[in-house]
Length: 604
Image 1: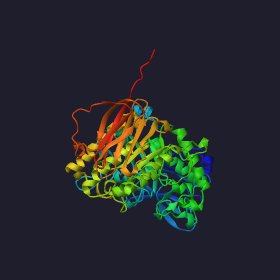
Image 2 (image 1 turned 90 degrees about the horizontal axis):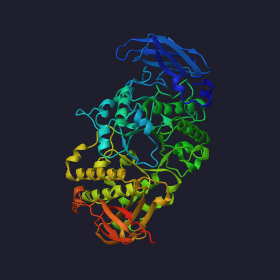
Image 3 (image 1 turned 120 degrees about the vertical axis):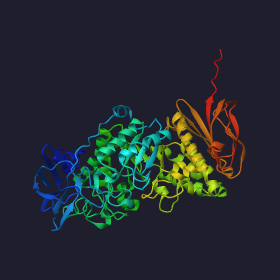
Image 4 (image 1 turned 180 degrees about the vertical axis):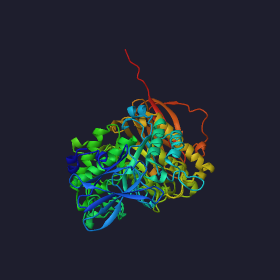
């Protein structure tokens, strides 16, 4: 690391200097605490009561260093900081790469993970998936599955189950809610203390490498949630680290977030360097295939409020960080969770953008779920909620998200949001997910949605896997698995996705029918889907296709194998069409077809 680059916010490897770095015979410690009166390293055993102090000395401006002979990997430690205000507080290491289990707030000397990576082929072939399927399964490591006694699986134990499950169910990527160490379970990891330390709830950094390596072996990419906006207020963390507002803003009006946490002061070069290095660390050390940046709206506008104006220093931070990460990890994905209308979020920095690869389409999500909550009669005057997204889709590279945020806080799960009684929700859920797949944009879905989870997300409990013992839930899971397989198989779902020529509304002009139809063109295949969102059968629904050709049924959400009432044909037979087709659609159903245009014969 270049120390001058640290002060000016240009570096992406500050962790190579700061933190605890074991060597043969001891460990070197370095911490940034410019206003501290004194700093000591306090080391202790993991389980016994032994401890020792090591005096640190000032080196570079604001930096403190010490060499501790005999301190080896696995030793616990904290920095005892005598602050500018006279306080004496034991802090965890901001750059520490491992921590003890909550509520203990000590760091652990660890160094680089020792995992034996076997993913060189994966790393060489991976891409940002612009012209490839991208179907993300969002999960929380501790509540996907649990042991019989209710305790979570370790990273190593997850490695034996989760990648195989994702592959079997047709997903391409796993997105893990924050794994950087955090004190409060109820924050789900979004209020962090250890930005370089994987949470010890599920094991060691080495075991996390094992999970990621297993995912790559199964052709599953891994995306980490990263929180560059704010941090936890716990005393042993970053707050008032040297007796002053060092990492946070000094003024509460901008220093305190809506969640009661501390906002980073991104105008400081050292803070930018800290966050850039943390982001780079997860990509570099753990072979992550992408980062999903949380709460980007709070970086664009002061406190996320457009009325308060654009925050120029945080925008500059975002641009510099994304540009640097793109240069260092050109095939890793950078994804923004952003609810604003700010332009060019996914444009390269050199073209005036923020430098993200993808942005969550929260407008699509809100409009779509609002539509499906409505009665069939109300839907007749609200079809625009399903069509409006295509008015702006081409402005950014979008991901369509049904994330954890839509399964908590009394909002109900995705399936529970569907209008009507219990039995009515499943056919509407099946139609919803085909609409999601045929709509341009990559896909993200939260764990449990794939089999119709009914209970809202609770970080202390695993998903309700017992629901799969009920035929209607098992059939729903079978439908989701089949749809995911078709999504991967036919390039029309994802090839040329951001080219307007590859999308066509076959029908969006008959809202009184509670119906619409979409066609998607790929390099190799063309598919179309027709939807009946009403509660009565729709007969003779006529669609005009882009010419003569052959259509082949691929999927009917009302087939009895998926919990519907229509017998699935033994053979999916093709039929020719002169340019139009009439369909009969069951209530709350959708049908998917492949369309093969007729080849015009040459005339002499």
